[in-house]
Length: 433
Image (cartoon, rainbow, N blue to C red):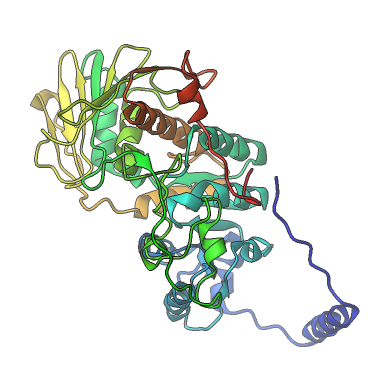
């Protein structure tokens, strides 16, 4: 379903445009050096024209990874918050030394621009999948922050949409592009650890609760010129305005109508790395167990390997840790940029680059390169689909407090109607896709 709004051009506007074009044709043309690719800038034909949708704190960081790239021209920002639009415009205009960055309250106006090749989406999780799919249907490539989807059904629809439209998608799981995480995954995938027995993921250092979302007491609603509240809520169930909800960037609903990080918060990163290590980018675990009193939850792959989601017991290697265990060895890594192995022989004399702080620079570059080559990114829509399904299914098992069996081919739980109803959810019109 495509949300395009028709635009009509009056005869007066057409004639004015034609007159301006004629004047431009008659005048001598001076081509600046930057347009020819000199001064370190990419030639115009090689540039990727980018727009942003909902760039708050995380989005501002991502923007900082896009702007230095010589083949990127950032031209527009869409956000239902006026203050956020102006913040991004100031950053972009300062970068380019002009006042050209366009601003829109409604991102559909940004998608109407035919000159934009790609979009950076960093809204709250509530909006991610819907905005991404609408962007693909509008012919844009997409770099989308995580969590990328609200539920299992939306995960499948996201992957299908990007397959059908042949657009490039990169989930913001930037740890896939960091050398020490990639090396740890390689050890697991290539059998250097022996037969894989378990992959361990950290869910979140904050709120791991899995519960349905609710309302907060209504507060006086600002004028629409300050924040378009209806547009801000988007696909989520309507609720009265509250400044705390408005300040969360859409994080009041992360998926399945639930709040709290659950498995989905850092699972979007850690479970994603575990999926990669377990050679499961094209599938998901087949059995999910509820959380134990020590706050562990597990899932089982068809191979017999376990996915263990736990909060504690990690080596001091920084945030977002993962651990991969095989019959003959193990490796653990985290955001410090360091990794620890069970035996020095696993390194085989190789020195793995230590890049701490989980920068997105390499991940953004991978996306931009794929926009040009039309290749698949390291965190494409199919990869994101399956890693998110693993997180959503784990959350459902935790919420229902029982073991669930899952068919990753039919994408349904076996003999559990209640769990199957939680694979999707009703979204507000006109945002249902």
